Image 1 (spheres, rainbow, N blue to C red):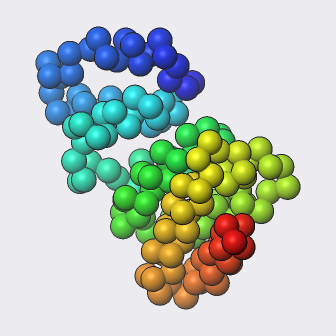
Image 2: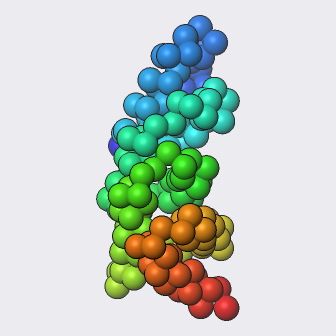
Image 3: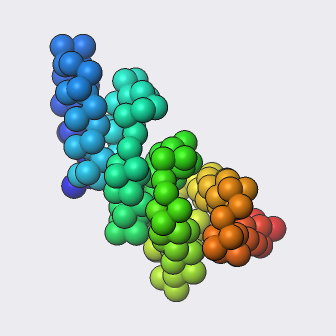
Length: 156
C-alpha cells in the first residue's frame, strides 16, 4: 500500500506532538513495514533518532527494494545512512539485491533506468557499494567493484 495524497493529508492533520516518542517510533516502523515511504520519511526527518533504526528495519527496506520498484531513492537513502547496523550477511544480501536489480533484463525493474532522478539513484548505489568495498570484506569486494564499474560505465 503506497501513501497516496489522501493519506498524506490525513497525516498532516494528526497532532504528532500529542504522541509519545515510542508511539512515533512505532508509527515509523509501521510506515516502513507497509511501504508507506512518504509518510515514513516525514516522520524520520522530524522525529527519529539514530539508535531507533535497527537492522531488522533496514532488512525490511532491502526486501522492499527487491519486491517493489517504487521509492528506490528513499530506500537507498535509508540504507546509505544506516549501513553500519547491517551484518556481513545482510550486506551480502544487499549487494546481491542491487546486482539483481541492475542486471535485470526488464528495464522497469532497474532503478537507474526506471526512477525519476536516475543520476541521484546511480550515485546513491555507487556510494553504498563504495562504502561496503571500503569495509574490506573479502567476499564483497569483487561484487562491489562490479557494481561500481557498471555505474561508471552507465554514467560515462
